[in-house]
Length: 254
Image 1 (cartoon, rainbow, N blue to C red):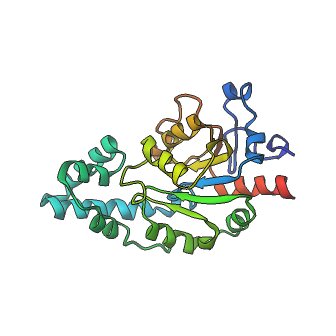
Image 2 (image 1 turned 90 degrees about the vertical axis):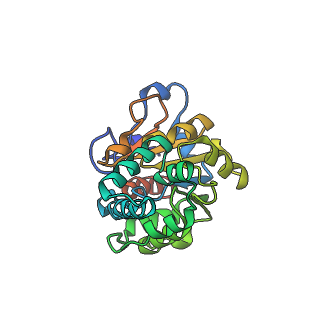
């Protein structure tokens, strides 16, 4: 049974919505590719938990405070630099390392020292992740300790086979192709049998080129939509990952 017959998975609107890019239908049946996938690659932040948890707001403030102290500048100038580096380098961290030779360890520890209590266990997500066939991978521009804190709150810490973070990627962030390629090579992942789930649309461009099925977990944050209107790299769209995955495992496994 395919998603086309599931109520609530038609069009872009609504929770758990899903779509195909029309131009891609003639080329590949992405529902069939989902059924042959043996590796599921998940972004972490604003993907496995709802963006309404606003963890990034906490991280964002801590970045500004760190930059202010590190560069001995006021908070307003620190925020300007923070956002400039994010735009130009993919992450603020990458910009600080590039322009100031900063050791990343202290920065990462400081900005992820946050309150994780807004992240709540979602039983639908727990059940869907547990029933999902194949290997499950975390691929994040954050750190493994940060991922463990989030997954512990979600109740799925033991469900993932691979953790590939910003340290493993040599501090080169998505969407640069290098960390994707390193992840695949290091863990013997066949991209043509893989699914990538991610909240930032532009971070799905390289996975699609490699042959992955892509799922955009869209949010209301403006950066989530960066790259969404360009090309044909988005194959499925949802604003509720738990509902989307639950629908998939129900139709595939009953």
